[in-house]
Amino acid sequence: MVGPATKPYQLSYAFKQQLMQAWRPKPTLKCAITVYAIIGLAFFALGISILVLNEKIFENFHRYDDKCSEIGQTCEITIQIDQDVVAKPVYFYYQLRGFYQNHRRYIQSISYSQLREGVFKNVSEIDTCSPVIRNSDNYYNTSVTGKALDPNQSAHPCGFVARSFFNDTFHIFNIADNREIFINESGIAWPDDKAFKFKNANLDLQWIDIESERFITWVKISPFTDFRKSWGIINVDLPKGTYKVVIKNNWNSKAFNGEKWIILSQANVFGGKNEFLAYCYLAVGALSIILAIIFIFRKIRRPKGMLDERIREFA
Image (tube, rainbow, N blue to C red):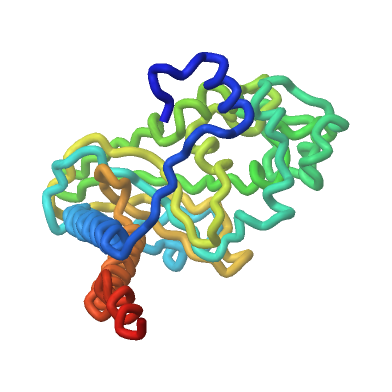
């Protein structure tokens, strides 16, 4: 310890020469038992809390690619809501299964500078987007404003990630009064992404609105083959009853034998319904409690001072 009589130059010398006195803890069984017990109880409490809160989350999901099998087809599915959903908002998700959005070749085919700078780039400046560089490499031949796109001009945006944009559309109606429930696109993307990372260059030369939050959400690459992404937010109550979802099938999932689902779900302080997180907390809590019990038995079998007594016996 540095006392009051210590001179400033002595303190500086000890610090520079790494001679400062340090606290070196000596862990004991009692300390280990206490730490593991506290961690175990805390993680158990969190895991159980998340499970209880998950049970209160409303979630409703339906597969629809088996009913909407043809590209360009408009179909309807009915969903049954068995409880009054009054805790707003309700998130409208689409879920894809079997789509490898994390494939190395796929995630490399994008130009983040093109999306971020809001400047129309020439073909030579977007070589990272290969093989989707020109408009002729894309599925779309008209711009956002309805003008014809030059096939030899650079695609804006370019790349596999942009070209595979999920473009199915959804409209939900309450069958009781045939009233359409508005699904709001605003608020599904991260504010910083919308403000700084995605800017339109010229809508007459773009095949999609880059600042669309549904497009921004799609470009956020999923690390898993089965994933869900936000399509919109419902900010009104959903009374108990039967609802109709009108779907325009534009996105081809047959090419990779995938599946398409729609999901209505709420969220809480821990996010959406996710039992995996709860089970992780419970697993860590159980492991900590088991280690604490092992150390307790170790302390009972060999209490402090037992070794000293055995040494005195043989002395």
